[in-house]
Image (cartoon, rainbow, N blue to C red; front, side, top):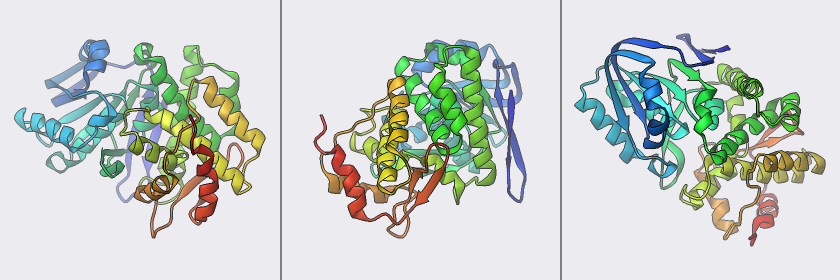
Length: 350
């Protein structure tokens, strides 16, 4: 299956997301693969057997969200300069969302921008992080606060890479599928309720639908000036959770799952969603072994960290909320006391 991404801009840019077995790739230029030891141990030989290039290099960086920072970007850049890659060279992001974000960001700044492609190896990266051109790294103030919108030349999604994915990582990816269904497609949500995605056909179908939905959004709003912000459902809460736990306690999808539960309770406070729908979302998250609770130690501190979110502006926090299942609302004028009524429900949880 091939899903086109066509961006509305003065210069039309188009690339394809190919959902199939990874094809043989030939490049008449220098190519550097950026990966980590875990992915390399399972799949690097497979990838190397699929690539012909003028010169082919492998850059291995440490594995984990805690290494998604400018120090690692400098390490990658040093390797690229040492290997004398030029403006015609190509980077390949081979790994999960962390590798994809860092590789894309490095490509955007190396010699003012070189090409890169995405070959995601986690479910979360296949359905979300590899598509749409968001790149960046974290710092002590928050998640992805340093970065750029920089589109890949292609995305190759091969679900065979998921066969070695730990169950916890697979569950984290399911959070993004659930997110897309709650925001945009009630029928897709009901499909996820019914199906366990144990067959490759079902999994391919779910990945394809999620990518189609994201492509539809990105085609309209590449740089998150409008509807693309909806993709951040659950993320405003999740980014605070990740920051408070130093990106070590929860995988990104796990934090998003908790964030969706928090967002749903806020939506209920505003009369946007029923208790029955909230329960259905929680049950789907639980079905995929995702966490739904978080202990907030200091509500005021948690609240103040909302303002470090990229979506906040003019001292207003932007929240993406479900309007039932399959629709959304964007709110940026929610009173502090309303938010506190939600946050206090997570105060003192064990």
